[in-house]
Structures are given as C-alpha cells and as structure tokens.
Image (cartoon, one colour):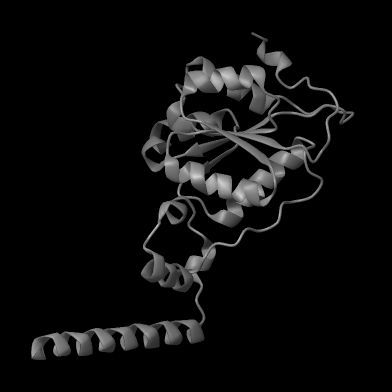
Length: 217
C-alpha cells in the first residue's frame, strides 16, 4: 500500500477526466450526488463502508472524494488519509493533479466533527445542502485540483410547485429533496402562489363533490 504522500502523484491527465468517489451509507445522499455528477458527465463510484473506501483510495485515480464525516473515525486511518490528501498543496508548476476532499457533515455529527474540520481547515458542507453552495464548493475544489477550467453549470431542482405536482401524479420520492434544500424552494412569485392556491382550491372542491356523490349513492 502506498504512503499518503504518493496518493496525489499521478502526473498529467486530461482535465475532462473527472472521477469522483462517494463514501456514504445513506441512499438518499448517494442518489442525489450521483444525479448532480452524472449531469456533468463525470464518473462516479459509491462505497458505503470505510474499509472498502480505503481499498478504493489505494487502487483508484480519483479526482474528488465526497465523504460523510460520520463514517470516519477522527483518529482512524480513513480520516487521517483524507485529511492528508485535503491538505496537500498544489504543485506550483501546475503539472500535477491533486485529489481533493469534501466532508459532508450531518446535523447529528456537527457537534464533534465541526471543531476538528475547522481547526484543520478542511473543506466541508453541512447537510441538508443548499444546491448552489454545494456546486460552488465542488467547483472550487475541482478547479484547485486542475480537473476543470471553469465552474460547473447549475443543476435544476424542482420548485415546491413542481415537486408537489409530481408527487400527486407519480407518488412522492423525497430522496432528492431530503439531500438538497434548494434556495428556489423558498422563492415563489406572487403569480405562482396565486396559481398554486387556485389549483389547491379546485382540487378541494372536486374532492368535496366526489364525497357528496358517494353519500347519495
């Protein structure tokens, strides 16, 4: 197994060749992140077990690791390896690609994880994520890694109106919404609100009429 100082020593590789390793055992997180990264055409692998993650780090040429900090022991080998990778400085000549790391911090882990991450100046985002902030953080890390030359494009998340309409038609699949708290969720125009309320009143009226019909029968 290689030493931690050798993980980033990969030489020149195409800047469009982005490989992302997700270390998380939460299926909602896995699906949401895969959706975002697939939109960019990047290759994604998911591992839910820390020991398996160590094997993947040892054999793969990753561009970015997104890891749930709750799966890492802050004194264990996985966290130590990822911390070393995250703190590795860029080559002044820009000829080497770095592996960058982003720690995801669930609310239940914040109390014990945030002081360590802040003290070590490690990149992190708290869950649930704001999509735009998350994309900005990912862009910064990939540009720093010399993997992309410009920020990634925005990814559309459904508004409240779109999500409720979809849920009524196809049933609720909330795994995506549980991961990302998009700013658009809280930004409906007056026209959208009026239209949404009109639709809700119309559906309520239809349900009442259906109920009266059944009472007559």
